[in-house]
Structures are given as C-alpha cells and as structure tokens.
Length: 222
Ligand code: CA
Image (cartoon, rainbow, N blue to C red; front, side, top):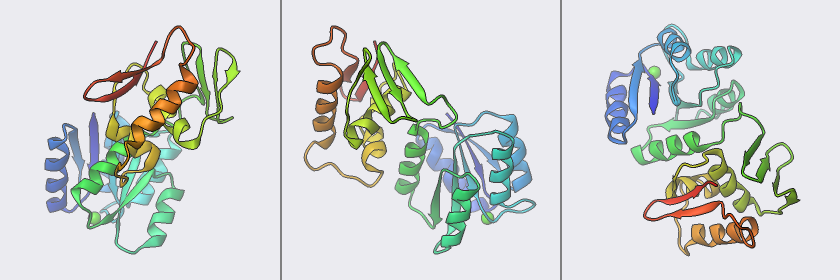
C-alpha cells in the first residue's frame, strides 16, 4: 500500500518515511502543496498525509481541490497543537482525520490503520456477500431476505469485514474500527462481540460466512 506524505519539514518527512516503511507501507513524498496535488492526482495512493502549512499551496487548498476533482483518497491532516479551527476546516474541506503535532508514532500508526480500514464512502452503499447484504444508507443488514438487528458494535465489525471480503482482517484493525484506536481489550471484548455477531448471521445456516483466521483475526467469505 502506498502512502503520500506532503510536508515541507525535511526532518519530519524523514521520520515519517522511516516509520511508515518499517510498517511495510511504501512511501512517496512531496515537499510543497503543488507537488502534492500533482502526485495525488497522477498516482493511486491508499492514503495521503497532508500538512496544512506548506509552500506554494496550503493543505486545505490541496484537500479541497482533490475533492473537487472527485479524488477521494483518504487524507489525514497534520495540524499544530491547539488550533481547533484548523481541525474543523480540515474536516470541512474533506479530510478524513487529523493528527496534532507533535504526535507519537503509535498514534500515527493507529490513525493510519483506522483510516485505511474505513469503508470507502465513494463506493456503493450496498455490499453483498452470498445472501448477506449490508445497506449503509438504511443502516440495515439482511441475510436471505430477513432483517438481522445488530448492536452498533456488531454492525461496525460486520461493516469492516464485509468491506474487505475474503481478506483476513487482523484483531487490531477490527478493534480500531469498532472501539477506536486507543481502546485496550480487558475482557476479550472482540471475541465476545464476534460470537454475538456470528450467532445472528451464521447460526442455523448451511454456509457460515464469518471464519476465524488463527493467529490473525477473522475473515468474511463464502
Ligand atoms: Ca509545514
């Protein structure tokens, strides 16, 4: 997965590059807003980390112009501590999340994972695997035509799994999405909620859809 970092502070760029590469992302860099905009339009990145204070074009403008051009690559904005307005404007112009400088690498990784796992809003509101259907507009899940009532946690877990069908989703990614990046399990919460979810989705069915991937997490597939 390729990430574009748009930031003019070379020191920070070096740190981000090394850290993200260590997590096995491939990293591309732009040192000003114009270069960032160009690269973001030309290449298909999984994520853009975009600073606000940039030479030539600021981060807000870059974000706005990308969204106007129907480029919906997820964006995490970097903002200076305490500037609440920056955060609000950032989310208004179409950023997905923000990080306040200075930030720890663990916080960065957690945000990156969370944003990458978010179901893509540009994709269809309806996803179907076998006879299981999630309709995000109606916030409704059905299997074989029958509506299945889910709790908010179960819904988020299912949404994460069904957005990546056939792909093993690791435990941390599921927890990030359903509980948030800072959540620490104390009572095996993930297994408990997956068990509830399974009993609603799969019990009494010939073909179970939610499967355990040992040592990793879970996968939804036929
Ligand atoms: Ca800067």
